[in-house]
Length: 191
Image 1: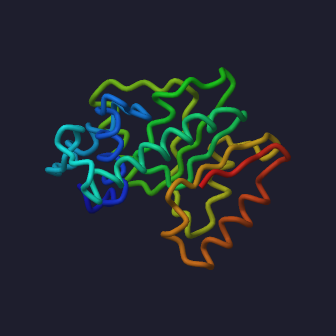
Image 2: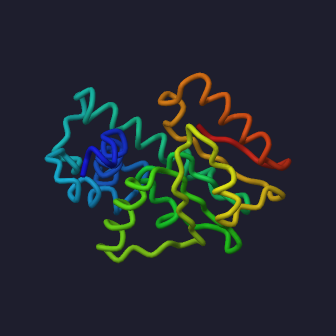
């Protein structure tokens, strides 16, 4: 399963699991460990199993914890949030959202399918209206987002967490143009 989901998404999940287990945790994510286990990977997912000085499982894990915390603090706040390349992000399941919020999670079908399977197996329930949208962000995805209930007339929080380095310059430019077209005043982008 790891190949279908992508090692990067699983690496971030492992880092979030480690961060959540730290006694001085910056960000909690009780679902992250379940993704790593379901993928059958023998990676450390508890803080005690990670060495702080390890480039991958220590310092990089702490970086992901900090990044998660910063975005957790700022993401809820507009009527719509769009997670671009959502991966194994669980913000819809663990953050306190305004009652009228709508979260759209955009990613490839294999990623969203794996995510759904794991979250359903642990009885996770979203805390906000949540709509997964199967798309390839390197192509034309705006119509699928609108068809899923996105309203371009509302302020939107766009989250491209860790996504941009994986896009070509052409795809990145296209993505930014699409965001500009779909964004109302009061919209914001986190990346």
